[in-house]
Amino acid sequence: MYFKLDGGLKILPIVVEYSGSVKVQAKALVDTGSAGTALDIKLLSLDPSRASRIVELAGIGGSQDVVIQKVNSIQFAHKAVSDFEVELGDFANRFGFNAIIGSDLLEVLGACVDYERGGIRASSER
Image (tube, rainbow, N blue to C red; front, side, top):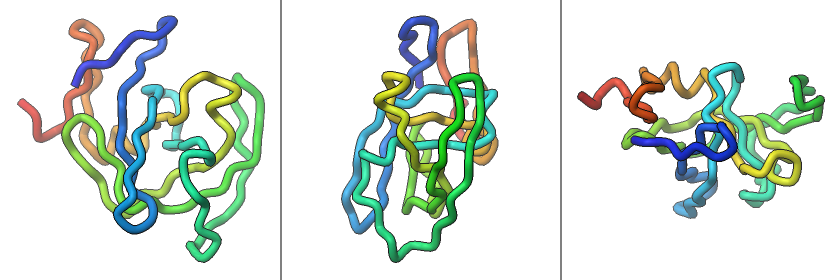
């Protein structure tokens, strides 16, 4: 899967299933320096009945509190991961994209970032 460069940032489309069979598409930043995968909270109708916790994230862009919950599935690079924990916070207004693909998801997918070709390959792709 090839990423689009937007102001030097690597952006990929992802599909997230959160509640029932509703799937949402997001514009995701590939961030190998981010430990966690994150979604803008406005993409989903937050389900308060799901197990969750609130933590403070801090980085170069500042800090904010996020809700951590599992999504039913998250898909990109032609692979999907089920019951994956993500950070839900206010990302779209501050950064211009509405999701972050962190190293946790890249590792689970066995992803390889190919800077020369401008893409990402998951472990099952050859």
